[in-house]
Image (cartoon, rainbow, N blue to C red; front, side):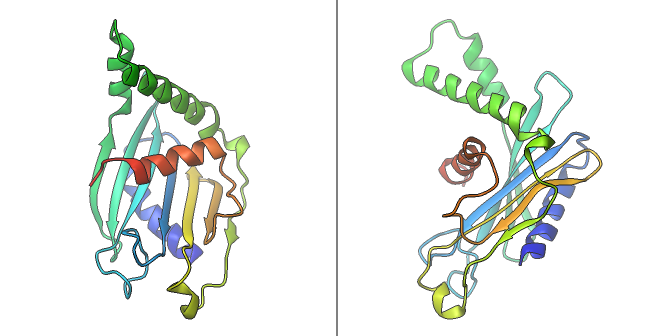
Length: 193
């Protein structure tokens, strides 16, 4: 299963080959029957995985963020660019900000700094492929609420850093907690349909 996720990730990242910088990819989905991100087709048939991809740029923008929707057959259905840099620029040029806008501006600045300072720094990651499995026998699949996570940072030579596949994130993941929260919030709390 770990290498299946690696192949899926490589297919998603191939969509961004025109960008020469480093690329971060993260996907996290659950296995509960009432979860719309359920990976088990015999439980729910309208399943999609949403991948979160960040591409490092050598421009003033410095990074681009994308959500990539993939169906059960591993076909890429939709790529949506998140225009957070434009939102950041717009908010930072306003003379008067409402309370919610100030909060959003601080949030955008904080996470942008974390991604740029820590997210793309290969020294923060292992070169090993880390896997973590729990008992997922068929009898337990229907009752557990396992979270499946996959992460990788690929540099300009396509070397992999920090690559991990976990079937249970209760014990934590190798990704910085602030970065993981940002990924999680982007994937699950966005209004992307």
